[in-house]
Length: 250
Length: 256
Image (cartoon, rainbow over the protein chains, first blue to last red):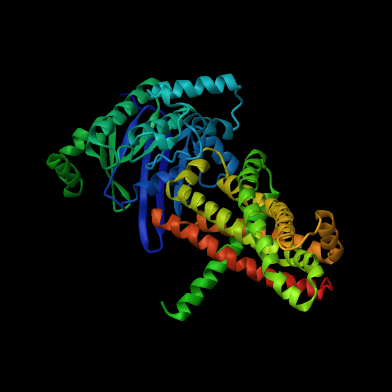
């Protein structure tokens, strides 16, 4: 795959919570049309990293450039423009309990002040639901859906703005292996269909193997190793090897 | 936990709550205004609370009259019953009981709703979706509570007075017109205005404490329950403190 255009660049990122240094000189680049999985142990700072990228947490030091714009010092209005191009799939799905599936999907469209008619909104909602194969749930409440269906609806909500980058926070956590596998297939299809770049936070080795073009090992708060799955699988460093040995046992 | 640590925790929480309230004031003055969500919250907070406020107000008026009657008869001032009940309800019992019912229903509901949204990342999802969650969730709810509690209090007083009228007629025969004239004649402007004004502060207290507890909810689902519970307890205590302050202030201003 020819990788040219950089869509996201993270330089010398530091983030601490008290004495807990979570990110420690983290450097990383994401290219257009690339799926990168950030692999790390629980509590290694994967979710902190992704929340810094979307502007939910402020880094202590370092820069995050998204589409060649540094997001660190952006005001809310500027940040919202960037966020309209970056989708975020939350680990807990974060569907609004008090809204129907349709209202959940319409919410980002209306809030980002995108000028669309009601007819276009309906069409975009239907298209996003078709992408995840759940058109029939349009008037259902999130509580009526299964865990896998909620994950798909959350993905549809992420897709509705046709983002250039999608950030996935533990997309298969809490799902059974079959449903998890379906979600991974969906992520791969979405990348092919929309040519999106994706940053996937995961410690599910099935997800790492199938969804990644490149893997980044997050260790001690830094980008410890990077490469394709096959490359890292044969890595000699014990800190890298441990993830793949675990995979072997699984 | 030692008393010193408890006191420090109390001061720390009081400081956080003050900052939260200051943020509310600053955010509610700046556009963009979430009018549709504010109206929806007014419906939920106001209209949907009316049956409960009405029922409790009605029972309160009825029981208060029935309890007062024997003493009034003993002192030979039974004819003053509508006036005494009217003053008690309008000046003190109506606003405070309505606020306490409101705190129980709305304070807990806001605390649990926002707490649940916090632990399931819905608040983060709103921020990512181009929404200022503080404005959308907190400002609308607190504004709705400020606007709705005075209206509920007035309606609660009216229903309570109707209960009192029925109470008067349990062992007597007084026309509604006569009862109403007795009540209105006994009330002065100084009785109605301070009682009405303090309900705005009660509404603010219930709204801001419910939102503060929910918005800062931690520890998963356990934290949601704690947020709802502590929102009710704290707002009930604050209602009594505000009531005490209101009485002192109105006294100083010569309203009593």
